[in-house]
Image 1 (cartoon, protein in one colour):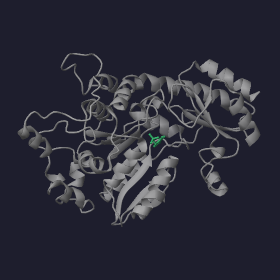
Image 2: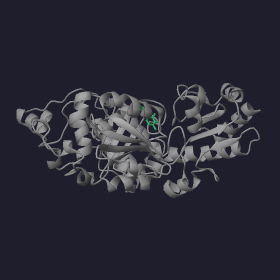
Image 3: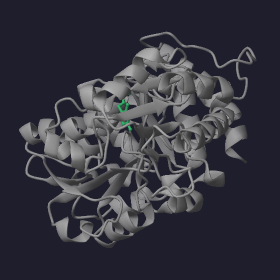
Image 4: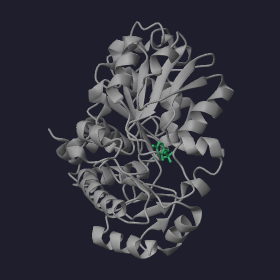
Length: 420
Ligand SMILES: *Cc1c(COP(=O)(O)O)cnc(C)c1O
């Protein structure tokens, strides 16, 4: 079945009362009815809802759907995209281990993975996900994960996904790809050799800026890479915290199962049923929205590229962009999502545009159906030292847009007025 169909139907078939909409199970706990059933659920002899921190029927529909749409085996929802990244990494690495992180990733991923995790004894090495030429040399016996973004926010670059996966596979190291900006509609990393996908559902999946959430999806057959792998003893040896359970012995996809039974159980960054319900509504229209986001953004990019006051436009959908070839090769129908940035030369001009546009809200978010404008140098990248700013391609005159679903001509007219 195609993604458009799976996004509408997988995980729920009008069971029970036949409600067309997925029911919202706004509940903390579940009546097991008998002591025997309770014991079976805890012993994993039977799978079913135990307590909403561990699982919930509404959240389970979301998990089944995102796994299907990402072409993966299983998924788990988390309370935010940041929690998805943390749990995916914490499922693999512990104090004394290291992870390898792409230089061009979301600011929150950089601070979490290179600064906060260091305080837990997990160190990060940085690699270039554009070329992946430096990746192999960074892998050692304590390396537990390679983390990167398919289409990076805010750099708007596209990773060399297949090369990264191939190198990591040679050393049996798990790859984690943040697919938030590309979305599963444009690109499915799990079909290109990547092991685990994470999402911030707060962006395109909700689509209307309604809620914070995260998702972790594992590929089909990932058990084979984990079972017997000396890097990952935690999947192969008895888990003392679960009366000696050995994940490798279970007939389920064990990566996300261990996130659920060990990490979410203890750390507790579970998704709320109502937010899961909102993300289910978002997934239903994700495919058509991504088409429109991509179309609109290309039109805006073409207008900006032809404008005399614009020095440079970064958008992989644009012919001549550094990542255009990769977008055409890797992404569905060459669609390139809704993020673009452009350089107007200096801070005053950038500030004038931010203050003058009427349809673009000054907001630090992306993926909303309403268009958004940001000035990275004075907001998201304010803490970055000037030398590193240049490396990240963030100049004083750089403006970033998250192009929404408004009429493209209206957006262009608004930008034309602001540019003067
Ligand atoms: C927003 C974002 C995150 C963090 O997600 P939250 O839901 O805000 O915690 C992670 N990765 C990328 C690429 C993002 O854009």
